[in-house]
Amino acid sequence: MCKKRILVLFACILLWADSLSAQALPRHALSLGEAPAYGPDFTHFAYVRPDAPKGGMLRLEALGTFDSFHPFIMKGMAASGIGLLFDTLMTSSDDEPFAQYGLLAESVTLAEDGSWIRFTLHPQARFHDGTPVRASDVAFTFRMLVKDGKPHYARYYRDVAEVVAEDERKVRFDFRTPDNPELPLILGQLPVLSEKDWEGVDFGRSGFRVPLGSGPYRLESFEPGRRVVYVRDGEYWGRELPVNRGQYNFDRIAYEYFRDATVSLEAFKAGYYDLRLENTAKIWATQYTGKAFRDGHLVKTVLPHKLPGGMQGFAMNTRRALFQDVRVREALSLAFDFEWSNTTLFHDQYVRSRSYFSNSEMAAKGLPTKEELRYLEPLRGMLGEDVFGPVPLPPLTDGSGFLRAQLLRAADLLEEAGCILKDGVLHTPEGRPFRFEILLHNPVFERVMLPYVQNLKRLGIVARIRSVDPSQYVNRMRSFDFDMTVAVFPQSLSPGNEQEDFWSCKAASTPGSRNYMGICDSAVDALVQAIATAPDRDSLIAACRSLDRVLRHGHYLVPNWHTSVFRLAHRSTIAMPDTPPPYGLAIYSWWDKNAE
Image (tube, rainbow, N blue to C red; front, side, top):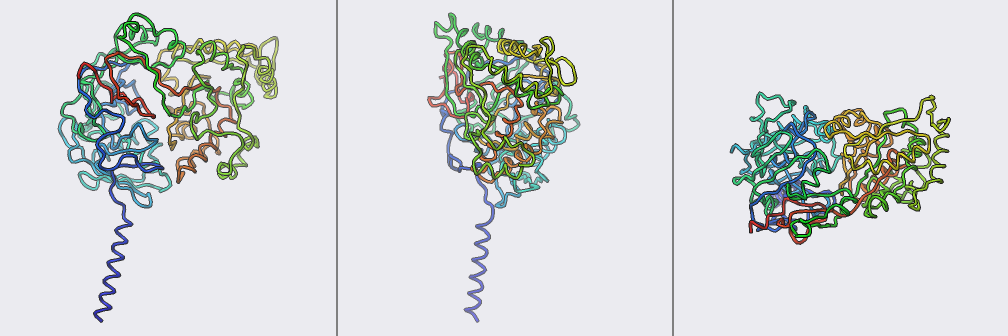
């Protein structure tokens, strides 16, 4: 009898031990795919100098204007750099595709079945007024962003069923479904606001009220629309955290505002700010000259990176009847001569973008693979048969500027779409002249667009370029008030539910979303969902390639170009670590040599 009791007790102990092993345990980091590169005892990121000196000022450029310190709502133009005031639950490293480490969160616990996640806050975490950051602040922030914040917050967090402040330091998010493996990492990016600070304040109101934050910098001073200065918080609660060691080294970070890029460049060369990231190849090749460069006060640097190129292109707004026929959209794509532009305008510094996931393994190639067909076959009834053939590629020209063959093909497509050429003017099937406006906010792009406009004119199409100031441009883009524009769709190394904001039917009808082209396709929606719920890396790659294939067959934009380097010019007294990270600039790891 005694022996039986011992055996029963032993069995109970084993069951109890098994249950403990199956329980979710706190961890220091989250990662999608590979395990985090840094263990729980890491002291700093490998690409920083942990003993970097503190001091000096970093002056950066901003274009346009600002009229708000509230970056979380649609109203107003938030000041550049305002994110320096706010810590997030977790933070990413720039030498991994997609891993996050605790910032406000001391640890994170993810349910074994992926149905919930718990963040345990650092006991030392403090807002700038000295009050502790509590779980209730996290819950408050989440609810306010979903309710009154920018539309993408509600979309990103749609699979969160409930947020619960379990005690002062623990906050739990319960999920509607465990099939969104990226959601825990997206929640890690949540900025945290003070609930007390917002008592009696309208969250939806824009203006110069400064929200209370907990980040490494505070707002020091500003001149509306001209300048904003942040000062490093010497009492910053998180300054000794491994994720922050060797970072945030400048005592002050200032943003100097300029009305346009031309004035900004001349101001840089005259010494009005310290660092400039150049995106225009011709300007990089021809205008970074002068005494400051000859004397070594200003330095040109090219830093290679491994970031996906995403897609930039002349985006067509399919909400307009003019662009609703895919044959018309393909015809407009044929009128762009990238090879001529690259040689004549860009000094051969670019590569043509072929994919919405350029420069990554997510780009579709050739015929669909077996893994891609696993996603495409169930959608066959929604897709054209051409989707199951070779993936479309932009035309390759000889760079001479003569597009006779391409324009003839474009003319055939337009005729197939019901357009009629009369006396050199193309008319829509409804009998109206084929005319549209190209909306720009950067006049530099006019030189790229003018040859394209001339090619369109040969087809009988009248395209008018209109450049507006950044504020007007932002407002028009938010309300989708444009015909064609230059749009950028950046991609990460681990695409997820942000794809919904780019391509979904819901985003197409939501002002402020990034579905600029107005794409609304059931097959696209299904593939966006497949990306968000991909259970592993191989499935994610196959789902992205499938989406890429469908989007490219839709000819929603005229593909532009990309590069795999950062083109930087900076003051010679700015120092950076010897080995830059592959997936970002990491400018907050730089320092002022004069502080050494």
